[in-house]
Image (cartoon, rainbow, N blue to C red):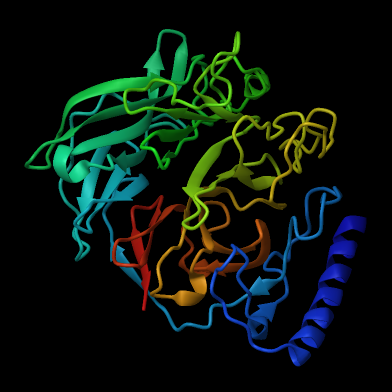
Length: 418
């Protein structure tokens, strides 16, 4: 409570300071010249989170949690664009503007530009859909228009448990099946758990795939997030055939998996590259408190389970109960209590210009879409969208038309546009 009171005091002082600043400052351009956009001061609000935190941990720096709120000034429209999907999990754009969606049970579907949902696309390898498993994320090849190759992540059964895996195959011309499906990567070791698989797929600038994994949740598997001979609790970078991507930070080191790009993660269900800088950002689930947004740098350790801004679900500390440790990265932003961030995307369009280069996160337990305004790699404002829908949002995507699309666990797809 001591820390909570301090947060409230800082918010009040911040509001006073912002009012004073806005009264004497001139209007400035909101163009992103050097990744430092100017936030409009006439719509600043108190922090969107009003519930008390689970801990009294001190943030490592000002603005690491509970920044001031902001409200979109543009009069946008929200529609229930499509429905009837079966536990959708991931989605990506097709070149013609349609959206390819995965369903947890192991099928894909295509949603048309008018919102109609196509039939099941079959032919994928079996998935273990128990717990948090199933067919997870999806990405189409950068040359999809000519080769029709699709990539997906899923929970794969093995001899010693389950694992996060990546497959690829060709979408048939009639769009009813995946042809020549093959598994190109498995995040070993396998583990007897149905939790914390990750997993998102994002292309780098050279046509390699970033893949996020989870550490499989329980106290036995948690240490694997720190072990560099295991692919659990990592972001890996692979080529389109599943090999370690050239230039990965640990290539050539003994007893280290060469596909590892970063480590010390808990359960990364959000990956996105900044549309201007190309930097890789992620969002991951904390335990009870401590959901994180991180700026990912190659070879860096992001701390789990050695440091955390959350606690066990029973209320006890994580490990030694510390939030900082030398050699471990701090989250750019964290939530306590949690919002359960799943899929994320940067908005690069101009349809709603005040959103350009903002980060949007689909929140499950939070039941909203979070909008984060980022300046100089720091979160400076936060907004909650679609709170009244009472839905668990699983993924969010900027469409080829400049609108935002969001899918929910209940099988709906929302469209946010002018």
